[in-house]
Length: 293
Image (tube, rainbow, N blue to C red):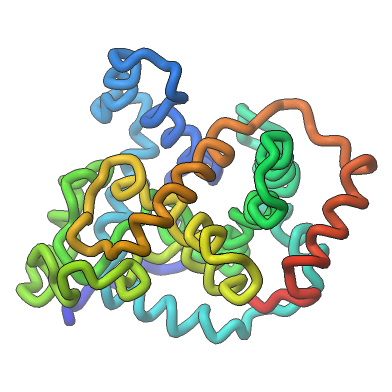
């Protein structure tokens, strides 16, 4: 496998907050009723105002190599960092609140509640409400010293050629895997239509929360957790040659979930005193009492 520059944990990440990446995704993929012409305007990646996001993706695309992902899987999927009751884990996640973020003063748990409440209001199954509640739990990676580009960002397969449907594909020119003949072909290390379950994705909060909860939720919910940031697939239709029939069936669920993540933010916080009994019962039904990180 290829060699790569070592990225130190003390190197400063470019985003003002983790929400900045999600706000950028919202601009790239506005709600369906937005006119097509306006949507095209949102995809102007040369806008100087987007310099921090552009730099974020330069780092992400440079350092998310196959070897890097394997190293992170070996480190974090031992689940030896921390163990805590599930409700304490939500409070732990709230340490990611960024007072400098001008767009919202809601903590991480309130965003999760807004997502899950929007899902519940539309009458979806309660397991999907649970998915909304936990879908960003993997962002605790930042609290273990991980750089932002290894926590958030559009996800993509590693171990094969990068699709030009991924945001800022030009930055993959700096990724060592691009020059590795074993990793830079269309299929790379994979077989045609092998299924996403056999594909290694770039490292981040999606994969981490999936691995934490893969025995706790129904299969469609696990796809929502694992692939909600895989925009090249569920928004752009890329990587069809890696998919099997099960992936295509699950795509409907991933597409169903994604708008609730992007478009449910509201400056008015949910009333936790009224919601607490419902969510205590929901968490008890679907989540383990203790979470291992």
